[in-house]
Image (cartoon, rainbow, N blue to C red; front, side, top):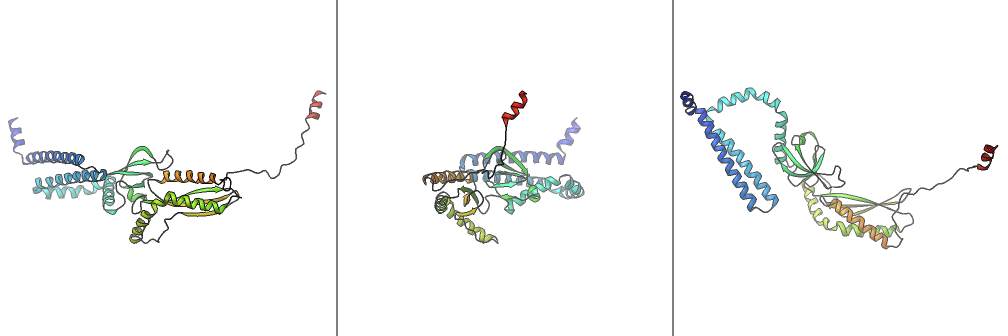
Length: 306
């Protein structure tokens, strides 16, 4: 027993492992303390999140440096061993390696960042965390109509950035073009209807236009894309049933549904104030022709009695 203890105590490898364990514990304690200080002193949510992420990253780097310093005399043999096992490790952990590569692409490639609204891997939602292996998203939609939270937190492997398109709703241009369709009865004052729609659209979505213009100028400078109109537009089409007005406007990506609700409410109020000059249309059925019907109930009843 004493010989075993002597071999363990005076074993250089055991001594290095002990140093490594103590160092890792000390680093972990400092990381926890710094995170608490950040949480208590940084009020802004986005800054606090990034500061905590930075502290965690520094802790991981410190542990890696500690390992390299402690085992610096054995790095050569370790490198040979890793080289031999590299092919097997790469095959077994290919998904993990792809996720780590995806994390690097997300961090330095500008795919998205925390706070962005994205669609990735068939899931749409707001990014609330970007980890080394997975991106955490607060889901919107699914059984909830419109861009509203469903309450589910979804974790998506970072490797999906290489497999599927990444839709970013709020990257370089944090606005969306949206539209609503208003059916107006034939016989209504279509010029008045257009004036009402132009006035309501400018009133409701006008607050987004200056910021959208500034953001779009940045997009034009960065990408090969033509200049686009961000002011509201009214488009008209006539079909068999009614005159269809389309209101196209720009809106903040997080206020799409509430803006659409406000537009509909004001348009309906304005139409009602015209006292019938402008009326919303609905689907109607008109019977053009009816074949003649000859029903002789009396003769059939007389035959039955006889």
